[in-house]
Image (cartoon, rainbow, N blue to C red; front, side):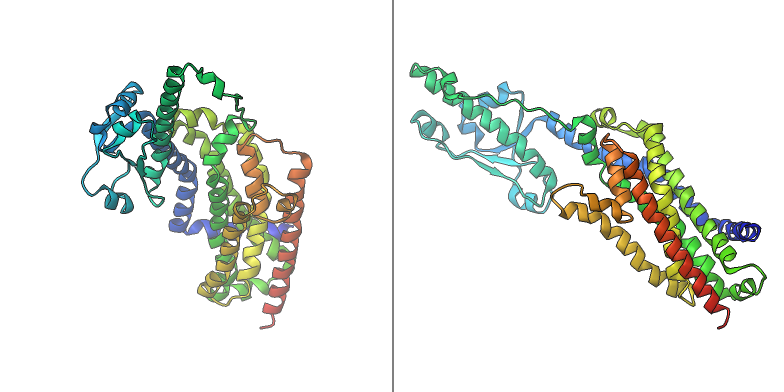
Length: 387
């Protein structure tokens, strides 16, 4: 263990000596949480501002005073639609849906004929599509008001058509609603941990082989397992350091939330920080060992970069399984590295319970993966001593 400690200090000094790479990793890790929270809060605040603005762009509303009166009573502001609004909606140059009112609206309404309105939007224009629902709800309110007036004129109570009342109750709670906006946070944190360990894993394996410093290290009397443990400890320490900084960055990042509703729903304190680290630290150790096992087979730094791209790609694709699976969280998710960590961190953000088995199972899988990868690295080093 003394030899492994010496190798660990040596590799850690080498990793910290590359100041430019270290600075980029640290800055990206520290700024990750605040930047993500600010970006999400700006998006949510924009949707909230649009919902509160109650702005409607119309064509032909001047010929429908009944509808215009209802819209004014609902405190909506009406603007004429600009020229070429259809092309602008498709090209995402106009961000509001457009209501087209036919000239015969008032005549059809007086004759008891349902007028046909046209609501223009574009599915490729997310901002306009998001506001189209509010406009449709506004028109539905006008429809119900006119239907109630017609029934009242005929001596029929409007309540006669309401055979039931529906009350909605959200069983997920406010934190579950906020977690829907924060689904990308666990993924980006895990990718930051992966990239934090990537450079150190490449440098301590393929980098040393390319520089010619690996062979002298193998000629020392230290056993192979001591060299492997020391190198792995340095790489894992880099990944764990990034995990701590990235997770801790969410604490001050909450102060930058621009959406008051999101700030009230997003609760991230010391408990959530501890659970995030309990999930991420074993994963950082396993990813460090996996990256070393892939990079040790390469004879140059560039070749190792190409090989570890497969690991980065796999880590990026595994969390997408939850998006394709409509059944929600499944028990087998906890058996897959990366996917298990993203699943548990998402559960923490939703305020769900984490049992001992939920935390222990990914730790056991990470420990087995770490042991297998380190054994493979030791075998590769043993072979490298004879080449």
